Image 1 (tube, rainbow, N blue to C red):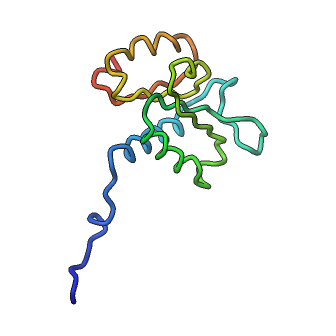
Image 2 (image 1 turned 180 degrees about the vertical axis):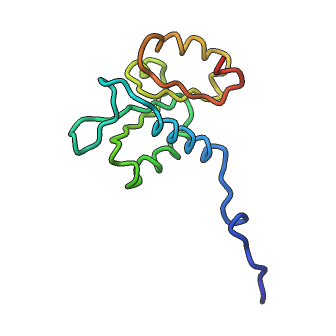
Length: 127
């Protein structure tokens, strides 16, 4: 029995949640944090940024695998899956998924004036 060779591109097929999670992580890496919210690693014994993922378990799970990797651990990132909007108050990073398309403006009002990096792939979000 012979099998056709499988190219690397055919073996690795990143899903949307994988790509979104990598973008989120890279946004965090290249963000200048306010002094009181600066990235701290375990070596400083202080928690790093708290990432809240609102209503999107796939993104949360993928980010969890990224945050647990040795390369990410010095950043001291913490991750929380939010199922209620009340948990976003202490966010350093807030990911707002497609399911919140109709009311992301209200969510942004909850973090207005706070040092929170808001990230979304909802069309028109940046406006």
